Every structure is written in C-alpha cells, then in structure tokens.
Image (cartoon, rainbow over all chains, first blue to last red; front, side, top):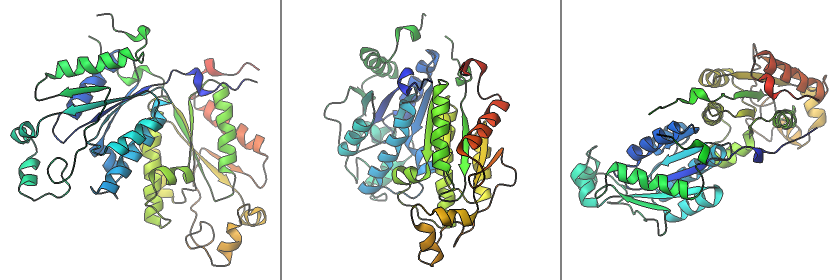
Length: 190
Length: 190
C-alpha cells in the first residue's frame, strides 16, 4: 500500500498585497486573479474586510488585533497554498513583524507593497475615510492615526500614484514567473 | 482571452465528524486521511483543538462561542473544498443548528456522527476530563454539563463502543463513494 504525501501535488503560492486603504490592493488583486485563472490555476482572493467578517468579528484595529488578523489570514493562506491554490491576499497588514511571521509560515511567498502617496490617497478618498481620519474622527486609521510600516525588501513594489494598473500587474506577474511559480505548461498562448 | 471558472477543477468534499470528546473523531479522521491520500487526493484534517489555537484563541465554550467556532471551521472548509481538497473536520460541534448552517454553506458535505455511550467514554477517559466534569469541575463540558445534540439524519453514524475502527472507516468510505465523490480513476487497485 502506497501512502503518497501531498508532495506529489504541485504547491500553490501566495501573493501578499500590503498597503494603505485605497492604495489599490483589491483592484490589483482582482486583476491578478483573473490573469491566473485564465492560466488554469486555482485561485482564491482573501480580502482583509471579508476575512474580518468571516473569521475575525471579535477583532478591532489595535496593534494586537491587527496582528491576530494577519496571523489568521496567514494560517488560511498556508492551508490553501499547500493544497495547490494560488492565494492573493489583499490586506492592509501594516506591521512588518506580523508580515515577516506570515512569510515564515508560508512557502512560496511573494510580498507586494502597493504603495501610494498620502496626498494621492487623500485626493481619491473613495470612501471618505481619509477626510474623517484627518479630522481626528477615526482612531487607529493606518497612515493617519496609526503607523504603516512599509516593507524593507518586498519582492515587488508598485505605486498606484505613478503606475498604471497594467504596469503594476505586469511587474507582479514577472515576479511570480521569475520564481518559477507559473509552470510553463500553464502559460497562456495568446 | 478565456477566463475559465473554477468549475474546470474537480471540487473536493467535506467529511464532518461530530461527536463527544473521546469518541474517536481524531483517530477516525486520521485513518480516513491516510486512505484518501493513498488514493491521490489532496487532504486536510481540521481538528477542532488545532483550529482553536490558530483561529479562535478568543473563543471559549459557551453556546455562542462554540457556534462561532463551527462557523469559522465551516468557512475554512468551504474555501478548501471549492479548491479541490478533501476536508476532514474533527470537532465536537455539539449544536445541530450550527452544523446545519455548515452543511448549507459547503457543497458535497458528509456528516458523520461518531457516537459512543457515555458509560464507555467515562470508562476510557483518556484525558481524565470526564471524571473531572462529573465531579462538577468543568463547566460547559459536552455530554455532562453541556448538551450534545446528536444529528437526526447524518450521512453516516458510527459507534466506537460497538464497532471497530476498520468497520467505521469502511462505512464512511462507502458513503463517500456512494455519493460519487471518489472518482473511479482515484480508486486503489490493490
């Protein structure tokens, strides 16, 4: 009787998009998901807000709660990645140490800093949150009343204030390909 | 450009083992995992205690907390199942309504009641918990100081007081095969 291990299956990988609210993590994550699905991969997008709803209704936005949130997302990501799924995380994840722990726990981890200047974020302010945060109405708002610790050495850094979404997407795909996570057989032929 | 949906991938399924502490859920879950891995499937065992450590350190054992725990396990299970993983849950999950909600949220769901008489559980008492619970030292202990609501219509019911582990395992495998969740190509030839 043979007991093959899970090693017989191709593992997935994680693309962890970190950045401030409104920087474009979800938009970029959704575009990346479409590209990877078009290549035949199994793909899950783990959105920070959605994870809060399903796994973390107990958590607020203190440093400890944010770290716990990142730890839960990392656990979920690890399980999916080791079962062959390409996992795209779109979560502010503002603290470097929590992201470092996530990286340690997950094989094949691509950290992407989705950067954007505060000026531009305030100018966009799609949800009106920056205006309220700058008026002192929101405590623990990353980049205003709470710190954002940018990654020192992310695999990819994109900037939605200065790059188009297509440029950013191409940079991320290059990083994934460069690490050999997109097998040649799953390359698109168009 | 083609955007195939995840439907092109074979979905997994969930085997949800519910029953009182010490009834044999984990033992049976591990044995089932070995059998399914031997057939080439991607398999994850989600153990209630392990999930508490990774996702639910905030939760205790009140009805509300137990229901939240089941909800989190169900969310994790749903993500894995839709990505082709055979997920084996081993968790007391004592409340019927919470299990029903888990069933609703997960495609291809096999509920297994791992039954065992209280007399036999007390006789075994591997962890010494029943003795303490019967002495009134543990509140919210399922089957003693907290209710266990047995499934009214589980796909499988096994009884570790009267059946061997092999018999129980065979019954579960039959149920999985009977529903067509084990493709013929993944049948073992020995």
